[in-house]
Amino acid sequence: MWSLLQIELYKISKRPRTYISFIAIAGIVLIIQAAFKADPGYLNILMQNVGDTFEVDKSKVINGYFMCYMILNTLLIQVPILVALVAGDAISGEANMGTLRLLLTKPISRTKIIGIKFLASIIYTVGLLVFMALLALFLSMAIFGVDDLLVFRAKADESQILQITKDDIMWRYLAAFAYAAVALTVIAALALFLSVFAENSIGPIVATVCIVIICTIISNLNIPIIDKNIKPWLFTSYLVGWKGFFYIAIDEDNVPIRGSMENWPAIRNSLFILLAHIAVLFGASVWFFKRKDILT
Amino acid sequence: MNLLLDVRDLSKNFNGFEAVKNLYFTVNEGDVYGFLGQNGAGKSTTLRMLLKLIKPTKGEIYFSGKKIEEGDNTILKQTGAIIERPDMYKYLSAYDNLYIFAKMSGIKVSRSLLMDQLEMVGLADRCKDNVKTYSQGMKQRLGIAIALVHSPKLIILDEPTNGLDPQGIADMRNLILRLSREMGKTVIVSSHLLNEIELIANRMIIINKGEKIIEGNVAELLDPANTLVEINTIDNKDTIRKIQETKWASLQETAQKNIRLRMNRKDVPEMISNLASMDVNILSVQPRHSLEDYFLSLTNNDTHVEPFTN
Image (cartoon, rainbow over all chains, first blue to last red; front, side, top):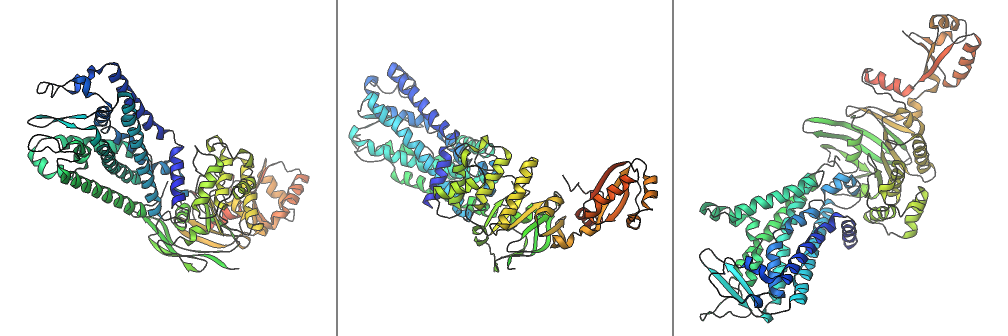
């Protein structure tokens, strides 16, 4: 099993498209960091929603933790596309190259083959997030220093600024990245599922991106019937659930409670729903892949 | 001779289209078994069912006397295959490709084993180059190395000479004969070229529209003493008259355009010399392939048969 996983990772590492994602992430993160280093005034754009409500010393807002939070807010919406690039290619890419039939004439069960491919996709996803953490969190900490984190939260009826002390932040980032890994694994499972049916990788990659876009639009609609009946079942409703780790609970005197979260049960439920999506999509991938006639 | 493969009542239906119908055949250990049929006859579908790439609609496959059930990979452990094109990871080297597929075959892989395989197919000196720089013949040879790396009992080659130049075809033919004679492998080789099979196979099956037409020993199915030879001359009427005066007169068959003699293949050079000595201006002498005749006579279909010779 381990040697097969090594082989799969080796194959992924040798494909140029694998590095597109890393280059894209590095490019975006470095541009944002350079822009804020050169001109902290960019913060005004982010604070448009809360600027009228609160008086904030902007020079104290920008630090490594804040930069990472802002970058995650910007980037985690785009990362599904990058995950689909590899996961959507897992089976269809082999079919397109003609290697799928050679692969399946080896004495390894199809369940194991697709399982290893899924595992490799997860490792790739985690690799992307670790890379993002290194650049967005640790590099930002090195460039902008460390201080308390101010989280600007725009609710439907009010705006809120939450202050998290600097010694209460790192675990939240670890938890947020772990949550993001689960959320992005749903995307990987979806792309893998679509990949089973295709004979070139463009189809499943584009289809995955389209599904994510459509579901995200639906998740952002404020229509009561959709809120009640559809949104709870859409994985896109939970993709930004990582923010929950930064919504710190506040006591009766309006003081943030160290080490707390405003709504842990909601985060936990989101995780369960995302895990259920993964289980269903991966189970369906295995079911169809085992029955697929290889005609390419 | 031990029975290696026993296929019983194998069928495949693709959404109402019967690609393979109730196919029975057997392959003995050590056979070079020719799998013959026109394009679309069901050869690849059958071979893919043997390799579990396609799930049969019905039928049974026995390998070394053991029935292959769903989920049983026994046949795959003992089989090496090239199905259609020898596709592999073009962005990797030959060595890497061989390493990957050797590992997936479940064997203990060493550098010396891989280099020996690459040496055998003449790719050792190019083993570090990416496969995308290889010619079709080199890819085919690498495909053979991949098929052989785990020392399988059975080797399945689906149209192995497709896309090869004449030298590549000859090399492949020699390789198949070496596999059988020197290494004792059992080889199933499919082709739509009857003369290819005639040159390498000891047993064969002909299928048409998914059904078995005939199966047996090539030597028995082919009778060199009964080869049909077509002769075309500048004046065929005069030639026929002259043939009547020779010992070949009784061997003549009726033909509308060409002169046809049914004779022993080894007598053809003597017959040509005789006709030349009688001042017959010969344009062509074409021994019609006996397998082609055989196929035509069995299928009763001479209008859609592709040429069976290169």
